Image 1 (tube, helix red, strand yellow):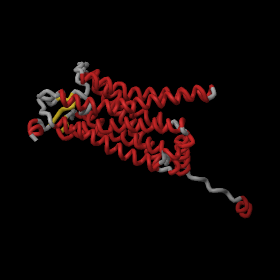
Image 2 (cartoon, rainbow, N blue to C red):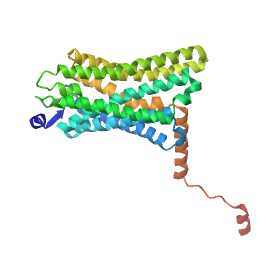
Image 3 (cartoon, rainbow, N blue to C red):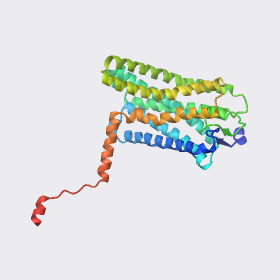
Image 4 (tube, rainbow, N blue to C red):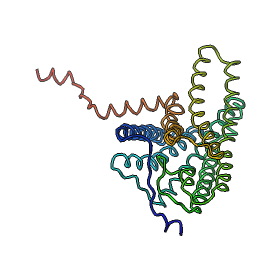
Length: 328
């Protein structure tokens, strides 16, 4: 309560070092990022929800990933766009802590959903005959619910740790409130809090990343030994695109966590740019790479477009030839 009474409002600076002439391009870019994420993830959620034949473990994971990414972007991006468009960068102290909780909660959830997707691929390739007995919809939904709860506790823990620190500044050098951004304003030594959050970050990042890389190693080995050259090229391309997004998600996060732990000082604008790249780019790419490129989703999407076109274009009534001849 003392903390809230001391500072009741914080200010998001976005990219603090850029000039005003770059504010419009940056805000438009962030707005387009949000629209792209909103559309692509919304399409994925609608397609899977409205088609019962897509109620399969992999698509259950994909829809959870889409919901998480959509929530993350909705909680963070509109506020920073408002800062550039309407000069409204202020955010309440409680709102900032909510963003801290949401960022670490939903970011952690994405890590574990990517882990579950790796487990799904691993079982499908290494134990195909036992796939349906090991992985089914009910089990997948229960595990997803557990990770929603577990990662929410992680987010709450980090937000509570941040709220225990008294702040001596108001300017958040970021596009949204994060643990490191809030702790940089603390009056006291925050080393113990940094140690705790670093351990949580490594638990959230390293364990999923290890198994994801292991699963891709198995997939590549199977591709080399069991597929033909044409299928091999297609499989290599799919693995390369998925791995590139996964590396963009995990590696910068690990780098930033280590940099904060060792007090490595980065340029503020570079730090915000890295944050935006590893946060928002995967959110736009995930629906395309993991869902919209699959045959079932493409087929469902085409069928929906055909139905929509049939509804929009009125049918011309058939002409009865006998009726015409009778009138002649």
